[in-house]
Length: 102
Image (cartoon, rainbow, N blue to C red; front, side, top):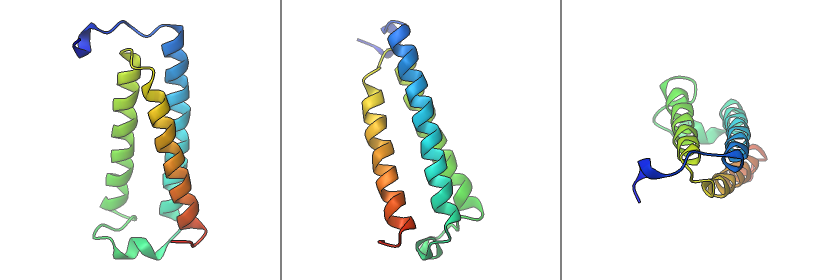
């Protein structure tokens, strides 16, 4: 079955899109908080979180969310669970970084 032949998202798909959007907002909030934390880990990166590096990181996060939402809108509602797992992993990583455990 090709990508274009999937049925349009119905009520179930609409709820999945809303959940995906809310998870995306949470991911952006987590990402922004970690970048604003001033953790010394970012001093070691080639691209600082203050300049181009921050834009690339948030742009990548947006691209992941956009592709995931497009797939869910095309009928791949199960992808919402994978994005939930991704959000939980981001949350755990943000917690580790912001509490100084990493």
